[in-house]
Image (tube, rainbow, N blue to C red):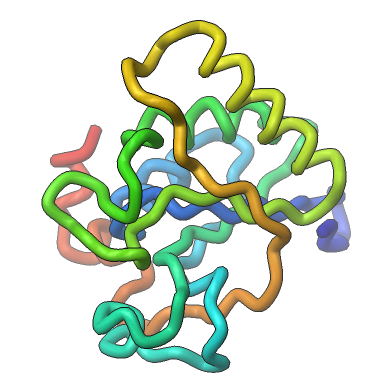
Length: 165
């Protein structure tokens, strides 16, 4: 999905990599990333709330949605970052966080993003970088529901983003 901007053509990328606070903090610092927001994607309940997502009532994953300038940072580079910041071999969890809302997923916005995501997974599998198979889901981006305001830029607002550098 492309978003028109007066100066540039901005693209979107949606990634689920466990709790959305750390991925948002990480991606927001990458040159070429114009904006980030956290929310819920990949589920079946419209307009989910955080408590519902955490109670596994919605099927959604905690997701960071990224607006980026492809002239500055490529989608392929964002994929590299995505695979570096979490363990894509864990099913429905990241570290101590357990549940389908913490699953690893790439929600693609067009055929090119889908192709690049599948190629990246194939390349990583072939490289044997991980001792277990990659379980990251690659799904079409559908409805993204922005999380409650207190979740937006959560680590930055609390000056604890430095813990993740």
